[in-house]
Image (cartoon, rainbow, N blue to C red):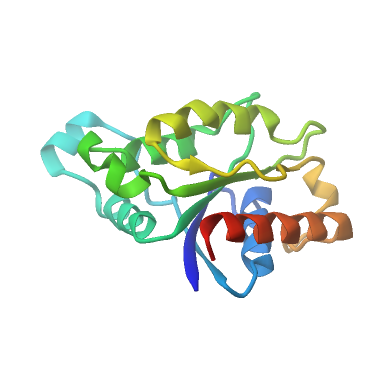
Length: 183
């Protein structure tokens, strides 16, 4: 069985992206395990903090988890037509020091999903991530895009998927990503 790490780019308790990530984990085929990691304890990147104290424990732990995983699944919100700052900050920390980037990200199968309450999905955010993924050296999966629009209609108050078409799209996405990962 292959294990991948899933991270949500939202800190909000009622996050649609966290709900989407949980739904993706639940829909993963049996040969793929999705471990959901939190970015809540990742501090704002500060080169002085890094120079004085090294890598914060939450960052080191997430780096090791990603490095040891067969793949990475990122659930990205879209804020103002682009990527969310907290998620970009996390990736910035995970890529430090630069000599460690290949250990964490090098050729790592990586997929993007996203949900937004707006009408346009997360196409802007997913597109904004592409140059970052290139710099990280991951192997992005370009299977069917999973961009949930009008997410308030797709999830119930507990964050469970209530739309059958979305449930099917998530299962199809995860089956394709599992194949890409080699699971």
